[in-house]
Image (cartoon, rainbow, N blue to C red):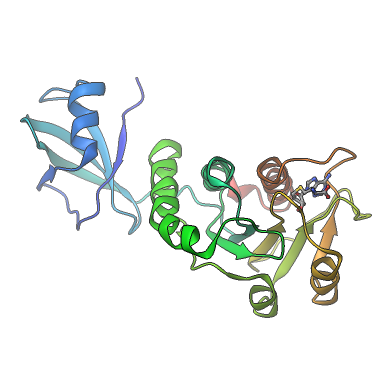
Length: 244
Ligand code: SAH
């Protein structure tokens, strides 16, 4: 059976007793029904992970004893930033979860002309989005938790880019791409439910973003993000197999 992994927001070291008090304690006790002697993996986002053994289970707290540290890093060797037009609640959650699984290092929520989520709602969701990224890391084995960056307007983000960049755009000519082996970061851009305006596409193109066409069907934004990230993963695999 796969050993469950938990993000612990506190310093960790080997041979120490770690008290887990948040909703994870409930999950460990009532859902996984772990008992003293069962194994866990703990990580705190600083890199690497700790093997641990449950030593005590009480009503509110699960205590685990760390045994050894493994410095394993399952991130891609290239930094990938996903710039994503802010989507409605469930679609955004899904896009973030899958983007993390597919190796995205940073997620930049973007305010574009056709974003329908209000500024007030965006503010209240930041912490929720970060917790989705953390849960996704628990599930997929990443030990460095991707950052959800402070939302910003599309034009501001585009003007700060100086790396290899692609924009998912249904009208683009390019249907496949190749990413040269190098250490340069990669940024990709996907629009919100209503897509980009012509002016936004023009701005992106003028700023050097390369358009990528993901097929003849119009995909939902969350599908487009997954699809483009899969292409990036595939291209990285071809150029540098150490990514896998
Ligand atoms: N309502 C819009 C579609 C928006 S889909 C329209 O009809 O044009 C949301 C985003 O997903 C788009 O902005 C684009 O970034 C991406 N996307 C969807 N389908 C795509 C495709 N076939 N090729 C490239 N990008 C696509």
